[in-house]
Amino acid sequence: MLSLGSFRLTRLVVFDEITSFIRSPFHEEIEEMDEDGTTSTYIKIKGSGIRGWFGELLSCHWCTGVWSALLLYTLWMYWPLVGQPLVLVLAIAGCAAIIETIISKLTT
Image 1: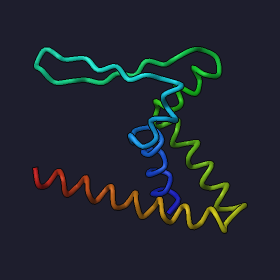
Image 2: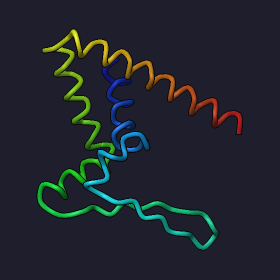
Image 3: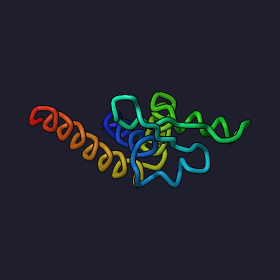
Image 4: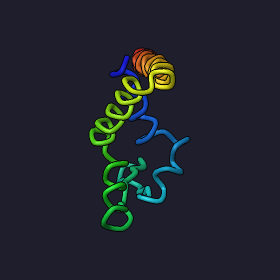
């Protein structure tokens, strides 16, 4: 449960459009057209110091994953009335995302 919940929370923070407002103060996305006509997106970290640190953190799914896991585990252990339902919802959403990715790959 915690693994799937951490996976989904990490994807939510690092990649999903709905949380772009969290990332926007710390980095900007730059789109460039490749030679073959495809668009590539790059991230430029804004600032330095603590702002740069948060920018690096929010652009790295490995880094954010550690902090997501720590947050969910702490909520699960010390505030279970909030932590357990939150982990359950995120785990269900994470499992659904994995299934959707598999089905999408099989049907294309």
